Length: 122
Length: 122
Image 1 (cartoon, rainbow over the protein chains, first blue to last red):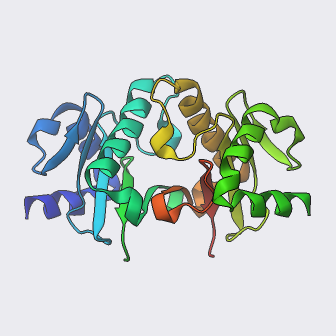
Image 2: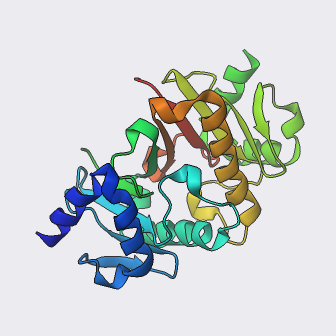
C-alpha cells in the first residue's frame, strides 16, 4: 500500500523533485523490498509489475532523466551494469531472455530516472 | 546491400566472434553511415529499422552481451551515455519520447552487444 502511494506520487510531475530528494537523501525510508542496494542505486520489484520479472533500478542521485546523468558519475554506471549482471545471474534470466529499458521524454512517466529490467510476456 | 549482408552474418551465432573482431579491430571498414564514432563505440541507423527512429549503438570491444561488460570499462559506459544524450538532442527526441533498450539471453539476436535507441510507433 505504502509502495503504491509512493508510485502514484512519483507519477505527478511536480512531485518528481521531492521524490528525487527522498531517493538521494532518505532512501533508507523507502518501503520496498530491496533486491540490491549500493552507494549509488536501489533495485527493487516493481510494485505494479507489467511482466513476470519487472525490476526497477533507481539511482540515489537526483537525475530527472537519462539526459541529466553526468558521464563523470562512473560509480553509478558501473553499479548499474554490475547490478543487472548480478540479478540476471541470480534469477537465471539468460536462458529465458531479459531486457533492460530506459524511457525518456514523453515515454517516461515518473520524472526520476529509472531503468526497467524485464523478462517474460507482458 | 553490404550492410544487410553484415547484419545477416551477425544473426548467425557462430559468426558473432568474427564480427566482434571486426568491430574491435576493423570498424573503419564497416559500411554504415556513422552518426557517432568514439574510441569505444559506433552509432548508426539500423539497416532494417523497426521504428521511425532506430539507431544501433555498438561497442568496438568484443562484448558478446551485457553480461561481458567489465565495470572497469568506464570509457565505454561514459561514451554510451554521452552518445545517447547527444543523439536525443540532435534529433529532438525529448518532445517525442525515446527508449534505450538492450536485450540479453534469448531476447538478443545478434551475439555482439548492441543498444537500440528508438522513437516512434513500430
